[in-house]
Image (cartoon, rainbow, N blue to C red; front, top):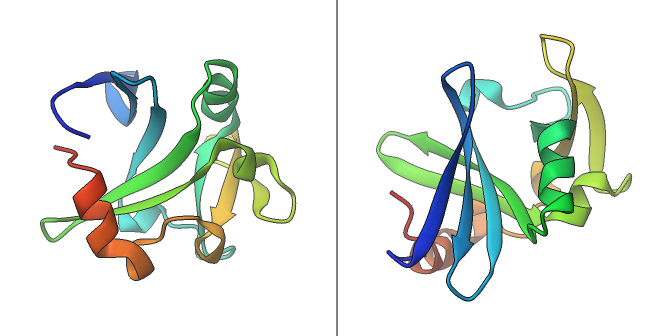
Length: 127
């Protein structure tokens, strides 16, 4: 994603939850911003609140994922929006506030930085 990408910050009470991206060609991606401590260690996956996932589905976002910055590097896990609702690839959970979430196990993401780091850096220039 270059400079021709529209970015819309997704915040709640002033806290950045993620960013909605849209390219000039119409591709739409949502990336939730997380820290390593947010990884669900019981299910070994990342979670996003159900309301945000439904919004992505309703507004035509094709891809939903997580960006985790660690030691100056960006790590991105990305999957199709439908994967977040697929019972074979995802799991239901709740945020500590009680809000319902859906998660995807790390091995189920279509793009995983452990396998595709070079490809991700080339394809996604996210600041």
